[in-house]
Image (cartoon, rainbow, N blue to C red; front, side, top):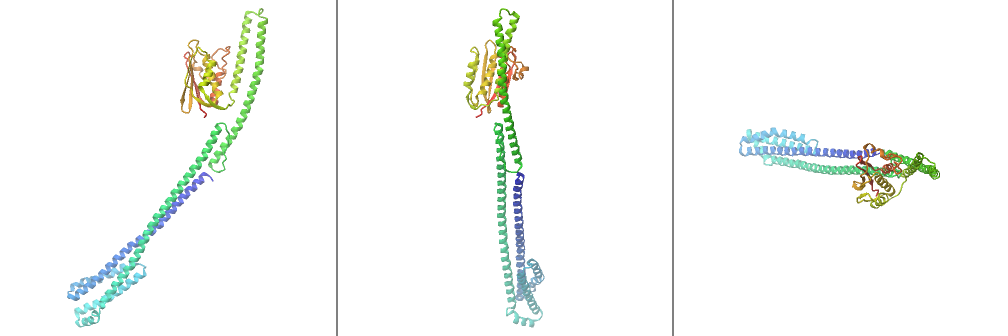
Length: 481
């Protein structure tokens, strides 16, 4: 599965969880809203019920006050109640809605109240205009507690109505609390799942990509060290193309390096053969000149003798050049790394190369895990170069070292004839020399060998010099450990 697909799936799951969370919260919020609306309506029903009951009770009190005192002012509340109570009943019918049990109770209360109104209006009418009729009603109704029974029945109906409402109210209140609690729980669950899934997805993708990139980096590192390995990658994603490219590069490099090694081996063999074949005629020429000088020394003119003296010097220079070429060709040979004490190495080289008349200064040098032969050849050529170009008097050579980051920086300084600025780069080219061509010890190969070793090791070398003020060669070298 491709990385983009995996990331898409991870984000899809997170989005789905978020949608599920939102949907659940939406449903819970609807329930909360419905229960809140019911509780709000229930509060209005209870308030209206109390208001209606209180109005009916005030009407009853007003009638009793009138009968006790015969004061018609008590009837003001009675007549006011006749107007307002029907309005309260109508409002309550709307608030109750489709609740049949409560509507039935309201209807029965309305009927009872109508009966009481009929009975009370007859009493008031009789008390006011017809004493005989009042006595009849008093004997048949009032003394038998007809009105009181109606009022008690109304009170019981109101209690029953309120009890049903409070019970329903408690149920919806519990449902509201339950909905709120469920909303909190579901929100916490979905939030935890979203965070957990998102975190796991990120960790998985990071670890997978990091591991695969690290494996590719390791392969690239091993390739840079000359070990041509491949990555076994069975995933079919975006990084698989990079892994395949690295594998192709590794195989091609391995093939090319193998071909180069074969060609280098052939060139080395060719160099040895050619050097052997070239040295033989050179030795022959040298021997012939020697024989001429021995056998015809009396017959050779002075000019001819001078010419004959030049030929051995040129043949010796030719042989030195051939030996330099052989040394140059041998640089590519790989040697095993080992722990090298640079102090000992440089001391051995200076004892062989540097004359005792030279003033020699050497820093405390480190121990390095490296190719001994390459470093030895490097120091030998640079120290030999310093000796060759030293001044005849007060010759001085300084060998310094300092650690810079992950590598060491070595410098070899002399107080010799120096090098003009225009030759600072040319001296590293093969066969370039600042001495006369007939001087045997200067072939122009030594510094070319130095540059080739430095380039092959991936290091740097530079020269600081002014004509007549000495020369300082500085090069870097890493510890392979």
